[in-house]
Image (cartoon, rainbow, N blue to C red):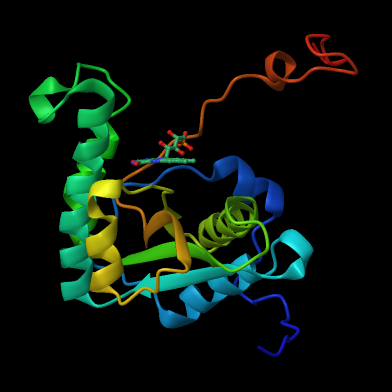
Length: 214
Ligand SMILES: Cc1cc2nc3c(=O)[nH]c(=O)nc-3n(C[C@H](O)[C@H](O)[C@H](O)COP(=O)(O)O)c2cc1C
């Protein structure tokens, strides 16, 4: 494949700090405001700019736009999400999820995936780092989406559904699946993210020694 240069897309004007510090997992999406093909090109162009092993550029993205295909995929996503909870906790339905659990919203996404405005599946092919090379690209994609106001959330699937997902989209066996990203304009308000302070997650010169800002 021939390599090309791309200018910075005109719609990526949000300062990088604002994009990083306001990005969060958006699971409720608007159905009355579509994501355009141009916007999808912008986020995929941003993904293409990411670091990757040896510049082999193994990242490949499957964009699911067709409503019927999203519905069919969404059903498999729902099955996959519950298969993961079954494996982890033995849960089989919503009444098993404890009050206040962090899984309440992801369970809602499992229901809503059938109506996601767009879904992108991320893969790698051939050499060039596999997961190490897809996640910088995925993060660029998520940040670019945030910068143009589009919400997204990184999710995974489960072995139970993989064969059917590959068959559904005619995905070759040598494409390795990594994650699934629904995208859409956010529905409702979303607040800031809460994270551990870096004073507690960073060591300085020796493991366990605090950074200067502790
Ligand atoms: C490897 C990985 C797997 C994830 N899987 C799911 C998932 O299956 N369902 C979901 O709703 N969110 C999933 N997420 C999103 C996380 O729940 C989210 O990034 C985290 O809770 C922080 O959310 P916040 O940025 O809104 O604070 C996943 C994120 C990562 C990085």
